[in-house]
Image (cartoon, rainbow, N blue to C red):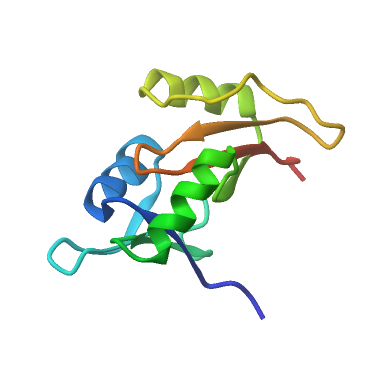
Length: 128
């Protein structure tokens, strides 16, 4: 069994779609502006796990998203094989990082804001 689709709450799926595709570099799998449906995939794994940018509305999703953000907790973790290079690319695109690079014993990681109400963890993964 594999994870085929996961979702995160966003304050605006249209704005989120633009950020996730134009800034982060994900590819559109499905996008319907009128239905507020935005699903993206990694350009590195277009047949991999898809990410639904779920409209939070005024539901429990809003409380969940805001609580995670206020606590400084990431809603999802994205991996890269070169965190310094990826971080520089994202900063050049205007992405706001929350903390200085953290160096736990298992690798490197940092938090950035997705401009849609979430903190995202960027984690350096092994190249193997």
